[in-house]
Length: 183
Image 1 (spheres, rainbow, N blue to C red):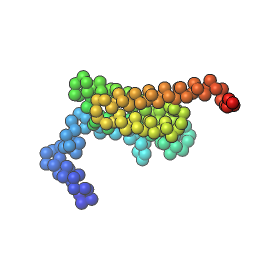
Image 2 (tube, rainbow, N blue to C red):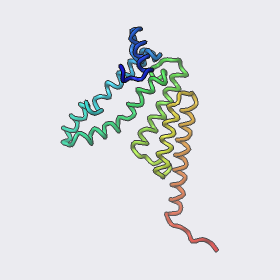
Image 3 (cartoon, one colour):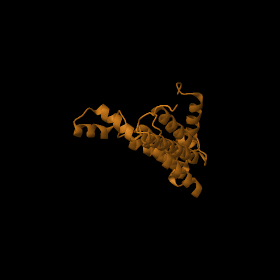
Image 4 (cartoon, helix red, strand yellow):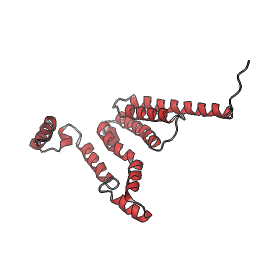
């Protein structure tokens, strides 16, 4: 216990006295706490060092397990985020009323688009650094628990996509050639 911070030790001691686990001791609803733990238990099949599914898949594919584990974690990245979204947005598990559920679903939709696009390196504007910055900003904005943040994040993604399409159309209309300046 000596290695823990004083706040953590206090929460653990309080949870122990009240017969609660650490998540419910900090006012996380019991269903959300259980789903959080359940999600991380299911992720263990792709996360090293356990990663049973990765070892089996690498054996079947006759490849090294480490690159397979890297790819599995990249493909399963959204799963890591969902477990934390359950803690931030109770609507993810149907708690909190209709508006909370709608907000959680819209948040999840924006993240399901932004995170795979970021990890899959899908071009948005055609400039890699700008695309990464937009995706990271959208992801960070979306996880802020406010009813308007997912909407603003979706609008930013849509604006980036339209900007990229406009730039691509302008390049196609020029056929990649530069006109000589007019005198």
